[in-house]
Amino acid sequence: MNKELIYRQNIQRSLHELYEHMTDNLLGWLPENADFNPDDITRTQAESIRAVEAIEAEWILDEDDRKENSLIQWTDEDD
Image 1 (cartoon, helix red, strand yellow):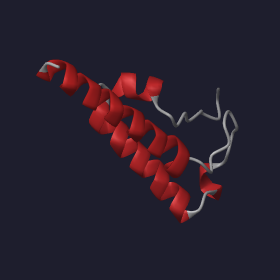
Image 2 (spheres, rainbow, N blue to C red):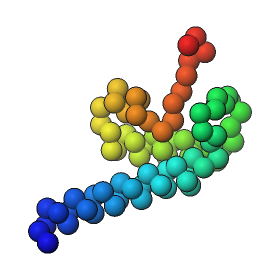
Image 3 (cartoon, helix red, strand yellow):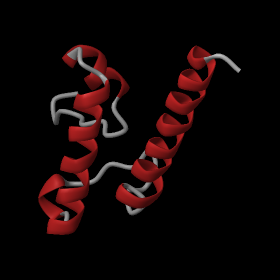
Image 4 (cartoon, rainbow, N blue to C red):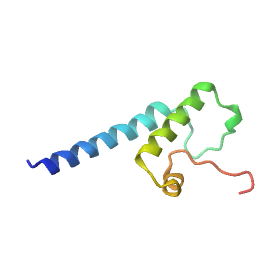
Protein backbone atom coordinates (compact mmCIF):
# COMPACT_ATOMS: atom_id res chain seq x y z
CA MET A 1 0.00 0.00 0.00
CA ASN A 2 1.44 3.39 -0.90
CA LYS A 3 1.89 6.23 1.58
CA GLU A 4 -0.66 8.50 -0.09
CA LEU A 5 -3.41 5.90 0.24
CA ILE A 6 -2.50 5.22 3.88
CA TYR A 7 -2.51 8.96 4.59
CA ARG A 8 -5.89 9.41 2.90
CA GLN A 9 -7.39 6.51 4.86
CA ASN A 10 -6.05 7.92 8.13
CA ILE A 11 -7.51 11.37 7.39
CA GLN A 12 -10.89 9.86 6.49
CA ARG A 13 -10.91 7.75 9.66
CA SER A 14 -9.92 10.74 11.78
CA LEU A 15 -12.63 12.93 10.27
CA HIS A 16 -15.23 10.23 10.83
CA GLU A 17 -14.18 9.81 14.47
CA LEU A 18 -14.14 13.56 15.02
CA TYR A 19 -17.61 13.93 13.50
CA GLU A 20 -18.96 11.17 15.73
CA HIS A 21 -17.36 12.81 18.78
CA MET A 22 -18.98 16.14 17.95
CA THR A 23 -22.44 14.73 17.19
CA ASP A 24 -22.62 12.01 19.84
CA ASN A 25 -20.59 13.39 22.73
CA LEU A 26 -20.50 17.16 22.42
CA LEU A 27 -23.91 17.81 20.85
CA GLY A 28 -25.84 14.68 21.85
CA TRP A 29 -28.06 16.83 24.08
CA LEU A 30 -29.13 19.08 21.18
CA PRO A 31 -32.44 18.03 19.62
CA GLU A 32 -32.17 17.67 15.85
CA ASN A 33 -33.93 20.38 13.84
CA ALA A 34 -35.28 22.02 16.99
CA ASP A 35 -35.12 25.63 17.99
CA PHE A 36 -33.74 26.44 21.39
CA ASN A 37 -33.00 29.62 23.22
CA PRO A 38 -29.23 30.09 23.62
CA ASP A 39 -29.97 31.94 26.88
CA ASP A 40 -31.48 28.77 28.37
CA ILE A 41 -28.54 26.40 27.90
CA THR A 42 -26.31 25.20 30.70
CA ARG A 43 -22.66 26.12 31.09
CA THR A 44 -21.68 22.60 29.99
CA GLN A 45 -23.84 22.88 26.88
CA ALA A 46 -22.31 26.28 26.06
CA GLU A 47 -18.83 24.78 26.44
CA SER A 48 -19.82 21.95 24.07
CA ILE A 49 -21.01 24.46 21.49
CA ARG A 50 -17.76 26.43 21.77
CA ALA A 51 -15.76 23.20 21.42
CA VAL A 52 -17.60 22.26 18.21
CA GLU A 53 -17.16 25.78 16.83
CA ALA A 54 -13.43 25.61 17.58
CA ILE A 55 -13.06 22.22 15.87
CA GLU A 56 -14.97 23.46 12.83
CA ALA A 57 -12.76 26.57 12.69
CA GLU A 58 -9.70 24.32 12.49
CA TRP A 59 -11.12 22.15 9.71
CA ILE A 60 -13.15 24.65 7.67
CA LEU A 61 -11.04 27.75 7.18
CA ASP A 62 -13.44 29.83 5.12
CA GLU A 63 -15.85 31.54 7.53
CA ASP A 64 -18.79 31.58 5.09
CA ASP A 65 -18.36 27.87 4.30
CA ARG A 66 -18.07 27.12 8.01
CA LYS A 67 -21.31 28.97 8.83
CA GLU A 68 -23.12 27.23 5.99
CA ASN A 69 -21.91 23.74 6.93
CA SER A 70 -21.73 23.97 10.72
CA LEU A 71 -23.36 21.36 12.92
CA ILE A 72 -24.74 24.32 14.86
CA GLN A 73 -27.17 26.44 12.89
CA TRP A 74 -28.16 29.71 14.50
CA THR A 75 -31.23 31.52 13.25
CA ASP A 76 -31.99 35.21 13.58
CA GLU A 77 -35.22 36.28 15.22
CA ASP A 78 -35.97 38.28 12.04
CA ASP A 79 -35.89 35.17 9.79
